[in-house]
Image 1 (cartoon, rainbow, N blue to C red):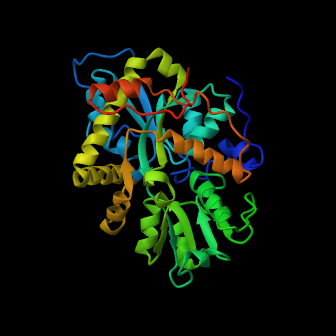
Image 2: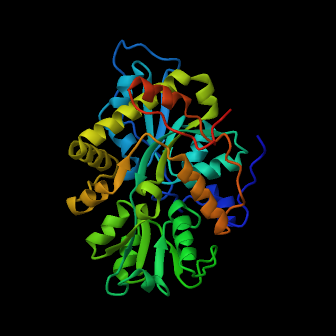
Image 3: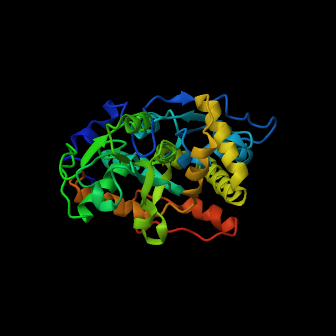
Length: 369
């Protein structure tokens, strides 16, 4: 495989690991925490797989509900038997990629931009995407007193979570499609793109320092609860209204040494997604309970209810949309054309799906040889 060239124009992404307080696709900061208080213990006497434990990482966010619910309900641990699951939570993609590279986690739930960054910056040597988890859950929410139509976005101040993150790239691409111009790095132009931590975006909206935001859930629904209006759901811009928001990644070293453990985690993920989709209300409550354990506060109904409805939980990594997202970053001048060949290895996922009587999924020609 030819070496992928690193991000260049976007200097922030080139040093992104050194900027822990910035966000990635779904995060809120960068601190990682041991989630042992949420992780169920392995069943006594159960047979271990090839590893004593598997270390997984994810964000305390609704778009990572497969992990939240799978851990909360013990669905992963059931598949792992005597192999202990150790869960850690992260609030930003760079810190999770660092943890994967350092061996602090083996498998992670993460957004497409950090997955692409991690893969390209390591010349394709540190990770593989092994499955999908979620689609959707991203909206443009605006102050209806200032913005009444899409054309009114011009000249306004709109927040995105971070320079070069998944939502930032999507918004810049949408701006270009309107025929407007914005300098990607500074955010200045026909629209003022204000990179703002999701954690403080609702306060920025209330203060009037921003006129709206292109953000993931539950931030979007928090803004609506503050009087904002959904002007655009990003899913409407994609074929079949589907685009990847959360993938499952694995360390290539761990995948090679412990494929049985990886398969067990994927089996747990597939069964968790099936349970979520069959029991949406119970799953929503389970995810909220997990969030309450992690943050000390559950989401109110006026936030979690609309947020939950806008997210689709899927085993399909929607590989073609990841490739399109990379193309959008290139078009915006944030990324030199990357070599993503080999970023996917869906062998074990398709094995699990076939055993469950489900349709296999496609890697869009970007699979490992």
